Image (cartoon, rainbow, N blue to C red; front, side, top):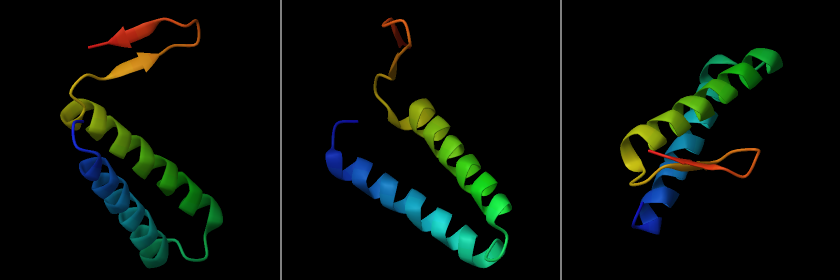
Length: 68
């Protein structure tokens, strides 16, 4: 991602979605809230790596780097 403002905007949108879902659907259900938050973050991350990252490189546990 070339422009840092795009990353900040993406993170703010993700936070807004998490807070909106929490308040709208899972206000008094802590475990369901946690599960939905994890799901939203994983989906956002997958979307980022699929569509927004120019070169998505992941550092693996053994020190190897996996790039697409």
